[in-house]
Picture 1 (cartoon, rainbow, N blue to C red):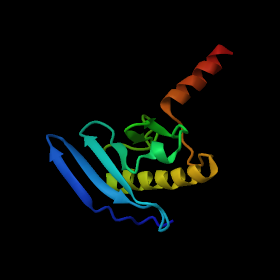
Picture 2: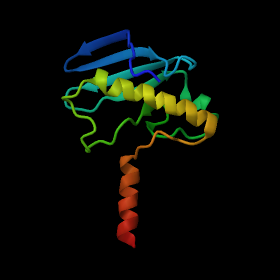
Picture 3: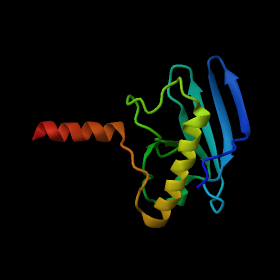
Length: 134
């Protein structure tokens, strides 16, 4: 998979925040996905897949590694761990991570196994609770 991606799209800036929409294809054989990044100064970027509807592609299965099923908001890193911070370029972190997430999503559709790794904050908290219950 190539690590070089062009992300031509449309964006808007409004009072300390921006929205960027673009189309991406994780591999030359992949379908195209329309992504939307919402970023407000002092917050984490939120990345949504607007087209196609991933819940329809999943055919009733719960989407893995997302914050929200609809609209589909991707989980790209674990907040509070230093994996991403506002001093990093979104073009060098969030955008490639989102495209890589789509690569793993397509693999998940074919294999029903999420190979993209990662951990959600609520899952980390559940594991902590289980450890303290023992």
